[in-house]
Each structure stands twice: as structure tokens, then as C-alpha cells.
Length: 211
Image (cartoon, rainbow, N blue to C red; front, side, top):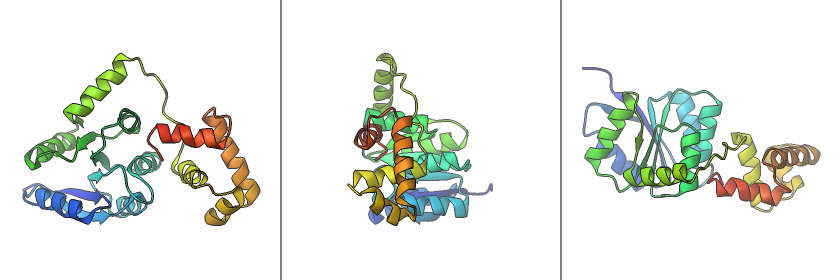
């Protein structure tokens, strides 16, 4: 028998993680080797365990799923990312596709269909939920050509603190940076997003489903 496909689950609901684990481990093909409650834990688990697949929720406390996907791509990690979510949003789907995820699956999926989708991804394919496909077709037909946001995980961490209403000094304390360094970095992020100010930069990132 070939070696089992190693999977990490990243979801802030323990019940959901248990349910997915149960479905995957009904077969000999998949083995859940790690779990995480948010994107921060998820990134560390993926770094440490180097799994074949990571099933990632989008909306979580701490670093969210899209930010985790950005970090995995930025670090060049080999793990194939599969979004497993309840959210069907054009901006989120577009963001995930641009970040190179291999699957976008809604949580209402039947266990058999989830396994079939994961098999296809392991074999080198990609999977979109049928409803997500409709959203992508609308995106293509309306001629969306907006480029991926030029942000890395550290940029998004900083924007998230800006979104919380923290001052540059308060952000500096959180990130162990000087107030001037924070100001320069926030201004640089706004410039790269072609935003007039820090508030507009946060709005642009939020519109793309990254905050």
C-alpha cells in the first residue's frame, strides 16, 4: 500500500476539525498529522510538519485563511492549500485563486465528494465548488483584471492592527518596532496599494477579503 497522504486541518471550530478528521480517516488514503485553530498556528504546523495538503477555513480568529495562504506562498512551502469554508464571496474566491490555492470547497460538501475532490488535487488537479465556479465565471465575464495585492503576511499583520484603530506608537509596541519605522511601513503599504491614506489601505485589503 502506498504511503498515506498527510493532511493538516486549520479551523477555529473543534467540532468541524473532528468531523473532517473522521471523514478522512475512514479511508487508508489520508492521515491527519496536525491541527490548528487559526492561521498563526496553521502556518507553524505547516512549517513543522510539511504536509501534502492543508484544509483551511477562511474566517478565523488571529491570522485568517487568506493571510495564511499568502504566507505559505511567500515562503515557498510545498503544501497544497485547499479552502474549506462557508463563505461564497467573489472577492474572497478571487483572492484565493490569485494566491494559488488548489481547491475552494464549501462546508456543505458530502464526505464522499470531499474525498473525491482531495484525490483530484493530490493527482495535480484543482477543484472549485460548483457555486464558486459560477462566481468565477461572473468574474471572468465582467472582465475583472485587477492584479493581486502586492502585500505579504507582515504587511497584512500591520494593516490588521491599523484596522483595530491602533496608533503608530501602539503598533510599534506590539511588533517591537519604532514609531518611525511603523509610520514608514504603513505609508509604503498605502503607496503600493495606491491608497490616499492608511484608512483607504485597510478598506482595499478588506475588500479583497484579506482582513
